[in-house]
Amino acid sequence: MLNWMTRRPGLKRKAGDLYGMVVAAARQPSFYGAERVPDTPEGRLELVALHLFLVAERVKSLPGDGEALAQHLIEAFVTDMDDCMREMGVGDMTVPKRVKGAAALFYDRSGAYRQALAEMPVDAGGSDPLAAIAIAKILRGPAGHAFAGAIAKYIRASDDKLARLAADDIAAGQLSFAKAPRAA
Image (cartoon, rainbow, N blue to C red; front, top):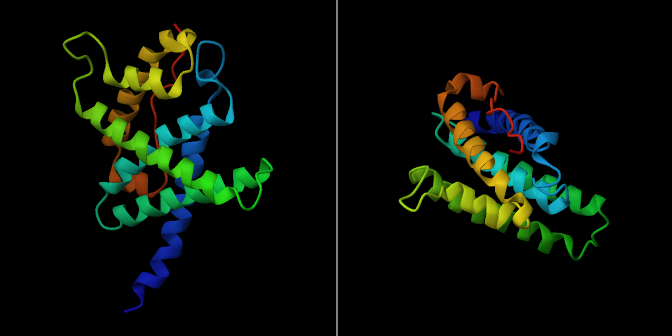
């Protein structure tokens, strides 16, 4: 009867472990640098949001507690954003606004990524909608445009790789992303 009370802490722990893997994937050095994602708090947030989207979408599809685990995963992100803001010296009165902004960014990007992944990799005009998102949201300035195609391929390959993982593997905290892209 009280089974739900004992399962939640386990889900929170799993979500915390998965979130740690999300952050590790987002912090791979090959993503950052000249003509790549800027190594700034904003650039890091963009890549955490990207990887969180990929994992949360896959986790939601798990049988049983998938939806609840995905929610705990997003809650781990919000908690991390709160902690990061405070570590960066953001004032107590401003932290909630900034965390709300980070959460809004995640949901905005999630909608854009979801829509772009549903489209064909290259539209009739010859452009990849994921590359367009990368240019508009992740990469700053024209120098990063050459890296957009590599980011788009990475997103599609990681989405595919996560989709092929067995539910038991994901529930056990075994995530696998594509190899991080290199600048062309």
